[in-house]
Image (cartoon, rainbow, N blue to C red):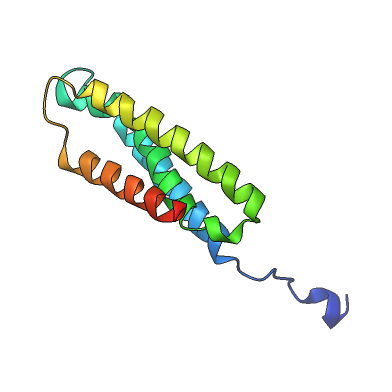
Length: 121
């Protein structure tokens, strides 16, 4: 084996991919921990909201990188983001219709809606 072949080859770090990987890990941990929540009451509603929460967080993050897409893909991305935001926000509002939504969820909804509004400008 020559010294040339013995050297490990490393691809350059890609921060966006690392960030997505870290977020995916956190979302996976969150989803796993949610199974320990009660099945009824506020805990049950949060448990049922895991998909909505993760989707809204992913959309929020993705909107931050929208400018990296070609213009035609940017428009499609915005359309998809709008559909996902409406669908998952509506699901959360329906789930918490009979009581006050936790502050963390209202903050999440406000943040993703602000990010969407800014991306549309």
